[in-house]
Image (cartoon, rainbow over all chains, first blue to last red; front, side, top):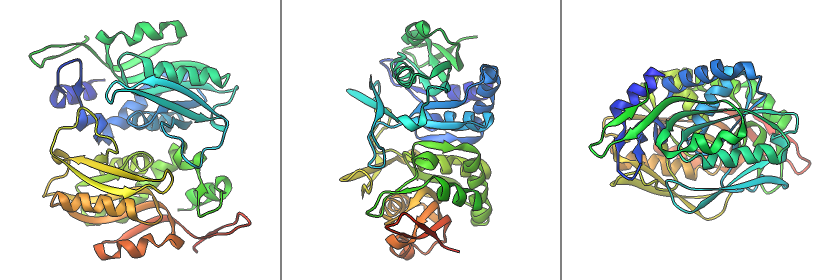
Length: 191
Length: 191
């Protein structure tokens, strides 16, 4: 998606150790117009798989997941990292390592919002190591629902997440693919 | 806003002690179409105050704030509760008590995303005690920016947040106002 790639090209800052700062685009400040466009693009790429629900993880994943849900006219469910007092048991719980904060995070979804009859499209901001998305896929499995696809705004291809998720046997679509981050600060995009 | 009030009427569950469960509408599952409509309504109510930036707090506030930012063509900034490794110093930091999780949360915004020239519209999901929104208003003040308004999806009028925020001297608009939550489970909406 050219508008998003241009934004990342212009605003992204490579901090070293594989960490790309896109705080001004995705993680802290957000361009809502580009995010609505991203949602429409995911709807275009995944609509034929007939998803019934969009699943993401809080926090930053909520934004592209909301706009995708809007474009497809579907409910969005975001996995919670902390159990709010309003969440009743039993909830589905899976764990994933946190790339940007260290440690491990839990991802929880109430059983009311993932049903065995659901066809689930996972949408997230980043595909890096793939471990957060893998935990979301396990939540889908816990619910006995069917995973139909995975969409991410930005894929850091050099981190291998796509290979990790291949076993799921579903289409994986990223709107912007980064092949490499060079020490001189250059962001190398896939053609 | 009738569509949102109808949703809360149908889906909201009063858990006692002032806690309204709206997990299926706002806090865990989200109706994207109603949220886009809410954003358009906030844009209608606040457009004439000429905001330049929308500010909210993660997590659930991001959703109506994104759709408002979209409707007004403005950037959205969401205050982070945990400092990501991509956030550089100095950041503005304020604290608010957490109503649904207990304890206190910090709210942080990078100084790059709140400028002294900004006219800020705060959008959040709930107006209850008003303390989270008050912390957001202090972030605006820390930045030397101008607060122009406060919009929330749902106001629990009996918790007094509106009175707490009155000193700010800006319009406060809530799309749905709850006057009372009765022990028999009835949600009493303002006319």
